[in-house]
Image (cartoon, rainbow, N blue to C red; front, top):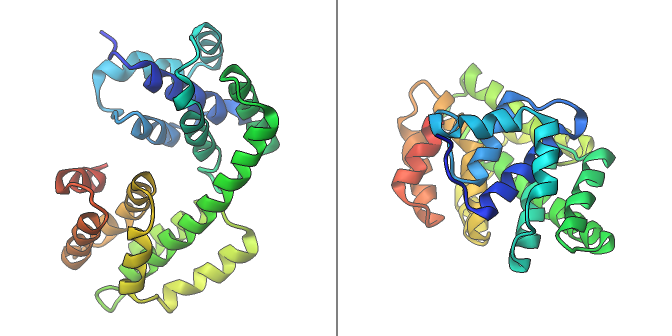
Length: 240
């Protein structure tokens, strides 16, 4: 039996799926990101029918046209989640923006408003990305030595961040000159709840990549507490 999703969850899944398919291919790794937005897991067997739909662009299109529009208060939240999907691989394309406009139109949001929101969200995502990379650099150097797995995770993370190529080159230097953790913690606290969770989700693979890992895990849970994220949720992020 398929898991029952709320209207908001289904709209999130459909919107993010359509945007992920905008380049004609949905990567398996993108499924986790979409399911994270609706607080679900790929391993949940009840999600399989929804995963099947995610892999079928035509099915997504049909369901997109069938769905009743969500409550107006959810429209911009949904559009932000969709645009986050577009930025997942580092940069959004014109095709993804066009799909985003289609969703906005169904939600009653004008193209002009959607474009303005995308500009704001892209700017916010770039700022959040800089914090993620700074934390990643600090974590990789936490025990005074950098393991190859940590360096590889850092490079992989940096490649996916929504920043310019020139800025990406500059941020790469942080791996060899990491910032102070205290200042980073202050920046984390200043973010909204969703953004704080997003930062921790992004740096979790780096914590898991450390073979010793005790200090990194301890710091991760300290950051989670600082970010007002329950310890069990933080632990789940490390297990994904």
